[in-house]
Length: 174
Image (cartoon, rainbow, N blue to C red; front, top):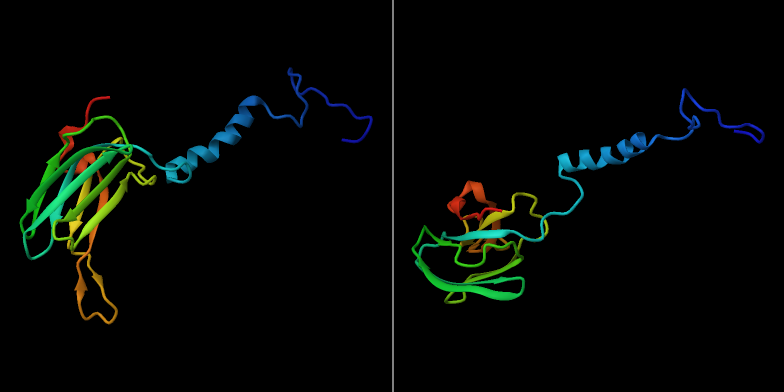
């Protein structure tokens, strides 16, 4: 507009043609958030979960003794030692708080050959409030040394959705 021109009301309202209604402004702001949420963009993942159990997988050719320690929000909450036969699994059901928390999972083979030190969730967990930890020893996803001459067994941990595993009934009611 130039000097001397005035805003005129449109219809029965008292807004100028250049003003947005509150509804239009909110809609314009909400659309990218809604689309981003549907696409899994933006807004980081969960910082806490209810860990419902730990499943240990032994992919090695020998039985292993695993030492497991769980800390919740910096305080040790659970420790155990369990034996897992070759090509077998062992489940450890929740025997710790059913409250959401940030976990540090430390699991190692007693002889020190393989170990995991993981923070769960790591900020990227975008699924339900309950989850279980999968811990692989001597994973079938082995890392190869340069030249491919030998396989180096590896260990790793990750969260799994609670409804896709052995600890479905361990998720406490909200």
